[in-house]
Length: 97
Length: 461
Image (cartoon, rainbow over all chains, first blue to last red; front, side, top):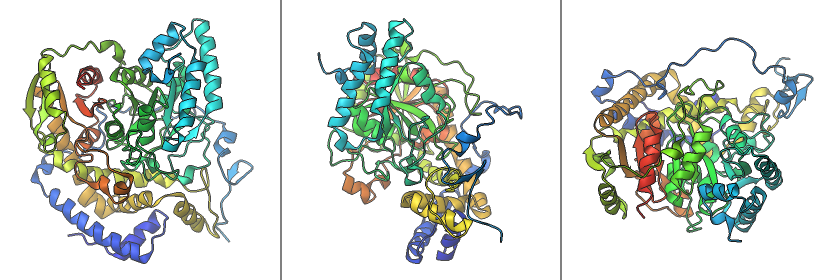
């Protein structure tokens, strides 16, 4: 059985770059452990070993595209929603000393 | 002149064609209704100036004999569709300043066919919910009872259609988000086969499930909209090359001899109009029979695992750097954290955290892939059923809309909320809900038959 503790929840929160207070993480860990236990039971169904995983409902061949620029050179449009941009670049806080 | 907002989309098209009124007049009538009923909070952004300009251009085209299929028809667009130059928020604070520099393919096709944009409708934040209560821009009220939710996530679109604040609206489904609010607001809703409508420009929630679709006051109205929106788009690799029929012309009200299956698993709770509807279809000449869909019960669990896993991936793009709201921080990580904490509501943050588990090595191996296998079994249920019958028939949501207060306390987690909707989302088959809350589900790519039967179902009041 998979047991999720508060620290795992906090670590997962960090991976998606959000914060979660200790007490909320505690509650979430407890509830998620219970949910995983229930899901685990459902997935014990031996029938699932007889079929492949279904990745998409799309039942046609998904084509590969030519590796060519179609709508390039739109720097202004690309930067139009940036909070902070310098020249042709998005600006972010300094990463390297 | 009578109230133009009383007309269905189909009747409005007829009136425009016969020059009984202009698109500007029709658009003004809808803008008036939007102002009058603003308290319902069906729209996040209203675009009256753009609407009147588009209506005027439409009238000019019609005068020149260049009328498109939806010429002059005013529509609401769910705020999950990117509209060039018009703010698009996904009902989230994180996109509260986002002005797309591009247009979704499906909405572009609506404008190319002559439709008019009235505004962007409310939704649960990133379409995650079935009550339209998680929007950063406030709750949408059900026009039939303002203390109740409109359903969701396309609740703004459903409320706007029901309250005649638009002639029709777009919606999106990931786990039932068109049919659910259609049922709660007593309007028609249709989600086509996965791959019929391009997802380009539709803000992503869970990509293997997301499907654009429509809500309107009648099935014929839905058919007219969807045949314009559908069709291959090179910008979406999961968009089909199949030809799109003129769906509205195939609604001949004839279902004589058609085999209609009623899944046993969808009969646990039935609405008051059920028996009458079954008898009605028999009287219309359809052959009704029970079918087994033994894995129905697993759909909610499979949806929980897959949608959260895919959502985590899709929502990684909101970094505060390229678009959307930014909250500053000393370091890059702090900037990300501050931005995403302030930008996303709690429901979205929670789903991302849990989705992380399903995309981690252990979660992927032990839960995500097995859930995808269970998804195959649910698909097999449909394949087997469709060997025997042409379509499936059931209630969409067999419960009455809950109050806003009940929704805030988790009413949407009840098992009858979306049990009958999720399996068809997981498998990508076309499905629709008539304005009497009854649904029809069809074979992959057989959207036409679903609409045809739904059009008859709708006659049963």
